[in-house]
Image 1 (cartoon, one colour):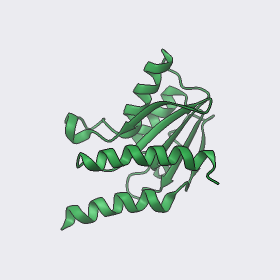
Image 2: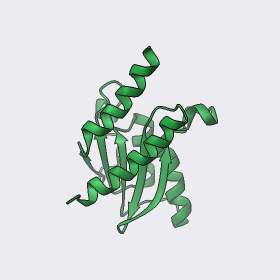
Image 3: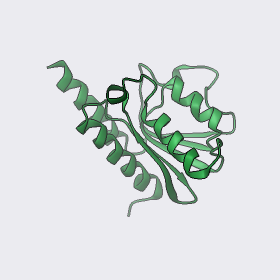
Image 4: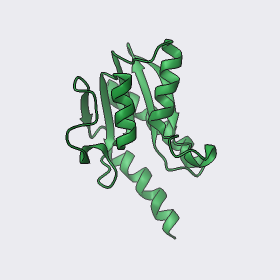
Length: 146
């Protein structure tokens, strides 16, 4: 039986698939509050011609609009790939309570930064459906290199 982390990460993977269909780097994110998805996003940097249009940023904007405020305390963000420094900082400013990600990003991931860019009270967990999340991104870049 699938647990809640896997359930919501699969929703983030659905978002990543939408990015892939749009020839964007396939990263997806969902934000969950009280067991319900309140924000969704996938990479849209090419479509919007905006380097800040990462999945996490779009999901944060969607969730704050839904809640009608700038803080996401009590919410969990599920993202298919380790957030970059910009997205980790945005999660900090939004006071997201928990971040759960799938695949590590050893080149641009936020864990390269010390101290952490996340809010001190944000719990971070990694590795949920890491294989699926990582294969999606790796496959995208393999195709681009051909």
